[in-house]
Length: 224
Image (tube, rainbow, N blue to C red; front, side, top):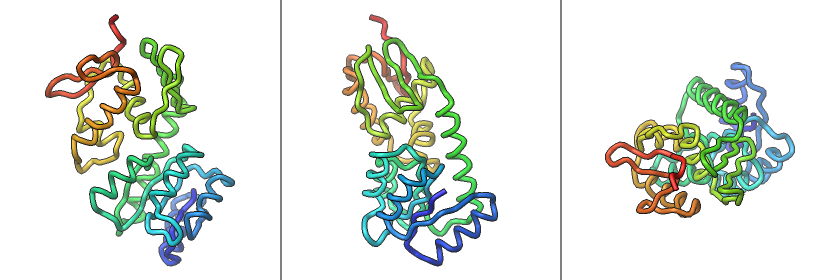
């Protein structure tokens, strides 16, 4: 595990608490050192503070996502909705607001790692001509690659794993955006619109992503 945190007292406390719970913990005091360590050490998970001295944590998260699929839990004092949405859209797997207990953070780490192991062990998800490979995080439609953002991929993979089932927006916010306290349905709507466009369809003329009014959305095999 890699903890990227500029406050030395918080770093020390996290190392003690997480080590006591069985984690091997490395630390980095700034964004650039954290990026180098992430690439060289390939940790199983990263705990990331956003208020870093050399680069905003959101920018570091985007840089990490360009080179790695390592799970990232953002642990920060920023508790506004804008920061939460930006971090999750940039590729964070979970978001914890300071102050938090070591037990809470450890539980979040276990939950994220469980999801990662489950996803990585799955064979590619196939729905008609759509292929979603959760191991390589690639998508193709009828043999042609589709370029998705990390959150668009997470959304599509979640729906593909439940092909034919109607999934509510509240569930998507909880499971894909990690917002168990609720959030704006608009976030889901916008990402569904982007996803449809990249799959070559629209809400008015759906092929794979079908809305069920008042209930949610489902991924289906095209009928034509």
